Length: 255
Image (cartoon, rainbow, N blue to C red; front, side, top):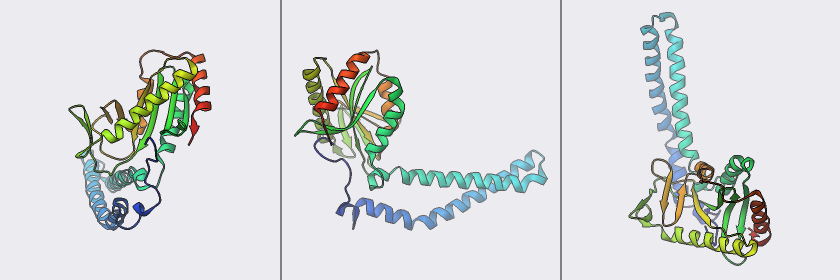
């Protein structure tokens, strides 16, 4: 977030009675229940596999069909459990969101003429995780994570995280985008505007994975490059992109 780190740091938040600590504790304690449930589902899959084999007159192969179906069901159930836990990695402090998003941005945008600068700040002011400059314009992207059950939504034009207003999150990032745009416009004499985004690594986004509220776009990290590529028209030439990227690298402090 502007002005500070967006991640839960290795301090007391990750020990004792923090939400992250309890989440991992309950996850581990619930492992036997998940295994028992997986065995039951695999057994049902075995029965279905045998039934399908008999239905198609493959009685001799029915045990193998049952085992294959049981394996598929068990593997699928394990994968869903793993994905659910893995989705909380940034929130739990196991991974860094800026590394994830930066890799996705470069992989999708670099070959299309976009420049991605990580960890930039106006000296003495707010910082951002990524600045993207390309044919479609400019974006700043920060990373954030909330608890897995936090609903992120827009009601009446207002941003909400659960039952809390999200203005304290949206306003600083919007102001940072304006400050970055003012600096780059002044230094390059190329009039630019910057669109602020927030990559949400953990939390409940609505179907589609995007929320637009209070001048901010909140979205799943994998959608950031897609939204950038969908920008209409070419607003910057290759020469302008190079000038803006060089100026940003020179004028914006690395964080």
